[in-house]
Image 1 (tube, helix red, strand yellow):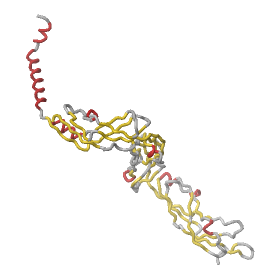
Image 2 (tube, one colour):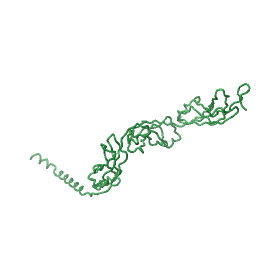
Image 3 (cartoon, one colour):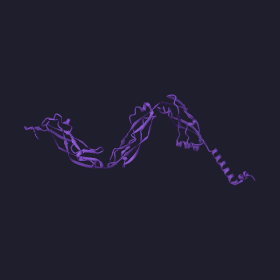
Length: 326
């Protein structure tokens, strides 16, 4: 007996059973009910690979209606997962183009046996505009407030600080900054790094690279520190009598991150009155004016126990020395 017949008859019962099962499954698939369904509001997505051009708006109309047929289970799966019509434009010949939609542009996923019967409408209008590319700074936005126990211990870090935006010239050339999605400070529970997406609202047809930025937050326990005896200074013009300030010193309360507040040297703080606020003050006259404070580090808040002081220009006695009092 030749080798070929021997191979055919070897385990012939098992092979016959496998053949019968295959025929049964084929017949089952062939007899599975087929449905025809209409899908409405299927989005049309256009991609332009011509680097000199970009879309200036959505396709018109932005969605179409599909008539699909196929096995019921595949139709149900597609209805659950969704689909789209993807149009790829490799070369732009005109700023306004009518594109006829092809059935094989409908994305059916892993669907088997599904046929696209019709696409309605059968064409869409696409408008194009010359593309430009610019480097634009990113801007941080916040919402909410840090929990009471925390305070920023260093400026918020942003990386990168600039992104490149490419899109229609009419939109891109007027963009002076790109906002990030707001960072919710109320959700901060400690120092960390957060990824925020670039907010591209109003930038239809544009593309931003990179689409996200990293924000680094360093927080520490908030503390309070009281400092007293900070002298209030005022500099009279040359040749003018001295000015008396009451009270002569002020106290301040500093609030912020522990390391920042504890690092403040009281000698670096300066309380002063702007000279223009006491201009033309005559001898013996007094005026209530606000006090300014300098030398407080960034991210540290300050509150003075006296935000307003009384300034009096001293009278000169017969000996030329200022007289204190009336």
